[in-house]
Structure formats: C-alpha cells, structure tokens
Amino acid sequence: MNIKPLGDRVVIKMLECEDTTKSGIILAGTAKEKPQMAQVVAVGPGGMVDGKEVKMEVCVGDKVITSKYSGTEVKLDGAEYTILRQSDILAKVD
Image (cartoon, rainbow, N blue to C red; front, side):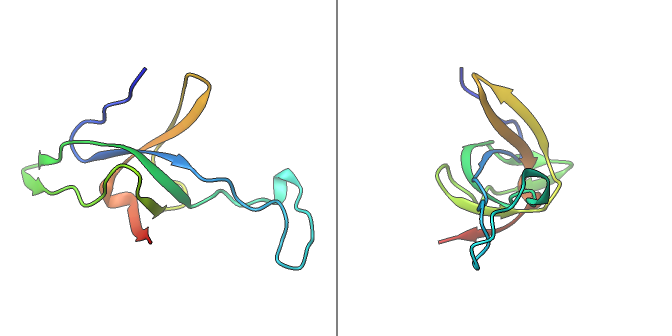
C-alpha cells in the first residue's frame, strides 16, 4: 500500500537514534529523545495552499531534520511513518 500526501504535506520515516552516548553509556528506552532526523518517503504536489503558492523543496530520499513533536504518526504495513507539513521541516542534511 502506498501513501500519497496531499497539498504541502510530506511523509517521513524517522531514523533510529543512538542507543549509547559518545562515552559508551547505554541509554534506557525512557531516556532516549524523540529522533529529529528522518528520511522523506513521499512528497505532496504543493500548489495552492491557504491561498499561497507552495513549491515543494524536498524530494523522496532526502534526509531532513524536523521539529521535535510535529506531524501525525501513522502505522502502515507494520512500519511507522509521520505525515507533516513541509514548513515543519527545518533543514536538509547532505
């Protein structure tokens, strides 16, 4: 099953965060922060959103940094995705 976002929305898959710190301390599940790094899975068409022209600036496969608690989390075929507006994406990572 495919997800096709509408308007200026983007579907992302969060990348796993580290289980250990740089010094080697293993983090418990509750001590981990919500990851902010994600990979773009699908991109909406953009166009007119709320009376303004929106040009999509991300592409499928881009790695991005998102706002910490933005978007709506959904499960599809056993995988977890987040659907959010392009404006909730803070930066692309090369």
